[in-house]
Image (cartoon, rainbow over all chains, first blue to last red; front, side):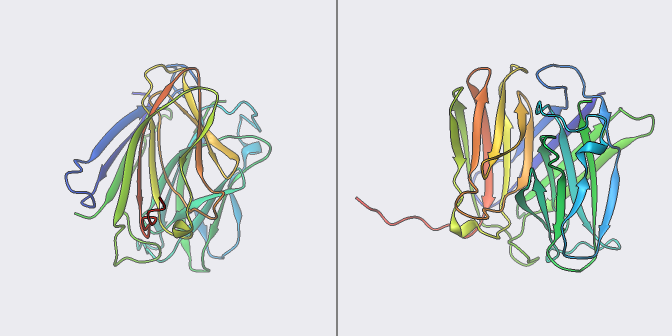
Length: 140
Length: 139
């Protein structure tokens, strides 16, 4: 089965936009070999508007890899106590750059580098409690 | 119908089940009442060697809830595009890979840039956003 991710986009913004679906298999860089390493599925509860490490690259088997391989991370803002809130957002940083904000129920799947000690960081917009679920796939 | 993005992830890497589902309705920043109401999309052939602005950051996009989908449609698995935001490398999309991210156009330097390696890479992109106005005709 390997590791696969499928996305379906639907929208009524643009008349006649028929939607979009795509499936990918996560592989090692530049090959058709299935990716073999994962952090496993994890969750992190945050209750303060301060920046913290979600993934510390040096803790992975790959360590601080400078080759920019085919790592991918999935992060989802699941809210708190089964209640997601579109007004409670969490900023996500990769390689020290703010990518964007995940509001309640928002998710992202993104390729990432694992270099130069640049961890994946998150920072809630407020002190409201929010929970993130995440999983990373990487090339060890 | 609104604008939605759903994802299913399945993996047999672990002996137990590793799967995830996610679905979000794309709303304007910080609200559950108003959905994103603008979008643009494209398909580009990216020649090797040069870094291109795929999406230009604008002041109208600062602290908004923009979402970007990008797929490397190349059929050669050795081809890849490097994704750069604010002059920092985010990651690589190899042939067949896609990504879906929130994109805060933090400032005018927060362009989403792309560089192809291996050969001409073909990419599909869709940007869901709000707040953009057309520039006045200049000439």
